[in-house]
Length: 139
Image (tube, rainbow, N blue to C red; front, side):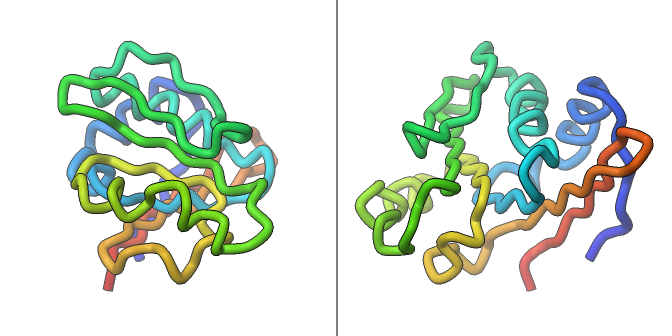
């Protein structure tokens, strides 16, 4: 696991995404509690990847596609899933096979569906308002 960094604002999130563009270009599991900053991270990452979409939490749509110069970027929020089987009907296999960035909130809801190449980003809020961010590459 990489050394954690502490990010304070959107500019730092965007800079971090630019530094980790390769790691964020495939399936990425965003792990953190409610309010940890997962959607905020995605919004900054969209900017870093040149998307003009502002980004929002796809809590009700479950998967939101965004346009970018590199093609479609997918953002999922699996919080509302009750069973892993519910995710199978969402076209995950096609999204994973596309090779496009696929940033997933609440990936713990679909542990058996995540491909082995999934990168994990842990986000932990700190008392001072920063976020402790740790990048874990696949084994």
